[in-house]
Image (tube, rainbow, N blue to C red):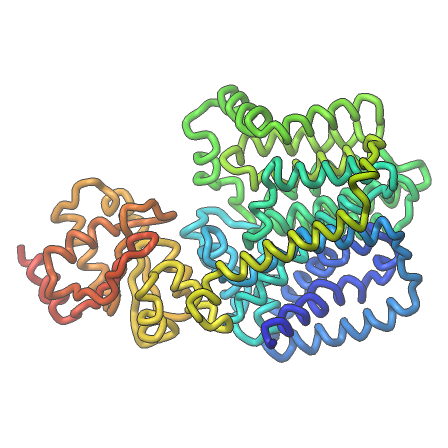
Amino acid sequence: MMYAFYVLTLVLFVYLAPGLAFFPQLSASPLGLATVPVASVCIVGILCTLLLQLGMLNGLSVPIVSVGLALVAFFRVRQTRFAELKMSQLGWLLFVVMICLPYMAKLGTTGFDTADEIYSWNAWALQYYNGLKSPDFFNATVAPYPQLFPKLIAFCYHWCGSTELQLPVKAALIMISFSSISLLSWICPNKETNLARFILIVAILFGANLQKYIDHAYADPLMSAMLLASLGFFWSWQQTFQTRSLVICVMLAIGASYSKQPGFIWTLFSLPLLLNLSAPAEKRLQAKVATGVLLISSLLWLLGPGRGVADNGGVISASFSGRDYIEQLLFSLNTHLIHNPVVGLLFLWVSYKAISNSSVRLVYLCWLLPSLLAWILFGAYDLRLGMHTVLGMAFLVTVSGLPKWRWPERIVTAPRLLATGAILSTIFTGLVIQKSLPFQQNLNVYHSGQVTLAKYFGADANRIYMTLYDQKEFSLWSPTDYITGLFYTKSNIFRPNWVHFDDYNSLIVNDFTRQLLIDELAQAKVDVVFTAGVVANRGSIASRTLEVLASENPDIFLPFAMSENRYGYKTFLVNQSKLKQLQLAHQDD
């Protein structure tokens, strides 16, 4: 019951109240209602940054600020004419809810335990939760990343009161995807295009396979949702030239760039260009002011905390994989536009629309093509890095006019369709919950560490949780980013020296690498070490060297948790006195 309470209050006080407190007019239109969650995240990011700088981000200030904003939102929304949603729009709302429910269940039954979740976004969030004003965790990521997403997570932790409540915090992240899908469902409503809109949304989610990122706690869905909403308000401003629409458009654009790097294409280049090309004479000053705000806000990060953001060799090398620019273009076009035919057809569709629609053509040339080019050059290794581009294509196709296809009314009616969707959504949600780790193994959903350890250490999870987790008196040594993320801030965790990466990861373990590792372990006075198995792990270093040392010195490295698990992790206790003797013996040799 408390689990549902945490999720509900996070939705109300973090994802709805802040946006409505500052922009109650969002409740007056379907576009605004779809934007409320991401507008709220922008406000939360600003508040979190201010509280951090004041040294006041804690479990007292966050509830006070959040409740205060909720009261302001309540009274301001009461004075605003609430959007009157037509029956078809209410049907779309139910459709979006039905899509999101199974993914919410998946999010809410796992901690931050996958790839970037564990060693980047949540690790940074834990630093902010503990009062660190700027992140210090770049071994795994090499280059700096925008930090709005981890600040959101840290804010949610303070609302819940503990970093162990990862599950409800993750469950509430569904509001980000809810915002994106709602916006595509509600923009330019026309009952006659409902069938085409339905096919389009289903195609990009399940045909192009964007759905696989809904249940992951990455910054990409947040950046995509904010950019999509900013694009929506730019479209609205282009038609009405209302200052309010421009303010929200600019705020969301800045939020997108402060969420993930591709947002800077929109903020630094595309949106300023579009504003100045679209503004009538009487609105040019307004467009220039907005351009100045966009450029200054972007440069503040790029020349400050984000200095060196372009030096992300890991991402670039993963994308190019030794190919030159021409080979990369051909490879990426083949991968993402030909072998993913939904994306390819969507690109052809929006290209055709750009020929006859001048407004679409302007956005197509100023943003869509540069964004597509950046994706296929520098992010070709994952569709996730181009989801904002795919959603942008869907948006442009929608606003340019969808085909007026008709439902086969004798077979398909709205009540039947919604009833079928509700049944399927309920079944899939139940299957996710039934299959989920916490309920399957009777783990405590309020202790996310126990849930996550079960994923990585299998039968040994409870033993490790009870003995090593959140025990600051132990010093742990980790060869991988995954284990580091699992124990980060909960225990004293050490990593191998990255200066010796090539030595440690050599196929041949020689006396030099043995001595390097022995010296590191002895100097750190570690109590527990881990090795990783043959399954590839992100950021694995020195595991092979440690395996050799452990096999050669069973009296120093004592087996502690050796059960089979998904990554072949093994846990050893370290006899520090004998390790010191071994260090001295090697030095004498």
